[in-house]
Length: 265
Image (cartoon, rainbow, N blue to C red; front, side):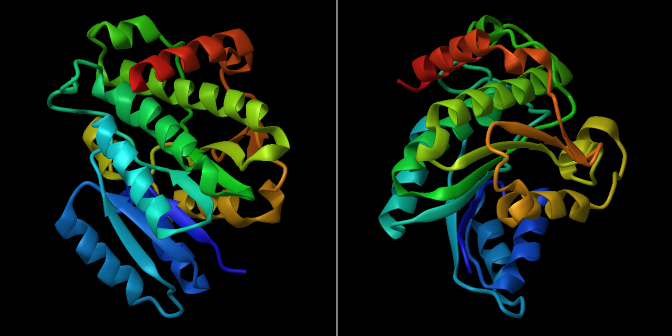
C-alpha cells in the first residue's frame, strides 16, 4: 500500500537518497528544502523515476519557526492524512549559528523545528503512521540554558547535544502518545556517511549515502519497525540499542520539552 511521506532536507544527502529509494514504490512524496531552484530540480529527478507517484515540494527555512509553522499548515491544507514524517534536515557547521530571534540555530533546526513540525502535524497523522527522527551516534549531555542564553558552543558540541535532545523528546513524545498517535522512532543512519555535512565537518568523503537511505526507508515502512515507538536504532550496530542515559530520564526529557515549548510559544 502506498503512503504519504514528508521528508525534510530532501534536496541533497540522505534525504534525497531516501526519496530516490522510495519513489519506485509509488508513494506520494512531500519533499522539503530551503532552496526553490533545488526543489524544482529534485522534483524533476524523482518524478522521472519509474513507478514514481505524486511529488509535492515545500520550501521553508527551519531556523525560522514561523516558516516551520507555515510548512505544517501548507501540508495540512494539501493532505487530509500523513503516514510518515522523516525529520532528516539538520545542520552542523554554520557561518552564523544564531537565529534572528537570538537562539542557537543548531538547537532550533536540529531540535525545536522537528518537534514543532511533528506536533503541528499530529492532527492529520495516521495513528499507524511513523515519525522517523534522524539521530546520531554523537550524543552529549544537553545544556539547554546554554543554547537559550547564546553560550558559544563549538560545532561538534552543539551537534552532539542537539542530537541527544532529539532522542530525548522522541522518547517522551512516544510515551505521551502511546497507541493514540504515530510511532516516534529515533535512528542513527550510520556514522560518517558521504553527506555534505560530513565533508564539511571532517574533510572526508564518507560511506555510501544509500546505507542511510536504506535504514530510513526500513524504519518508515518495514514491519520490523512496527513496534519501535520510543526506541533508538543504531545502524552502526545494526540493532536497537540504548542511547545516552539522559534520554532514559523522563524528568530531564520533560524539562527539555518545557524549554522547547517556551521557544515555540
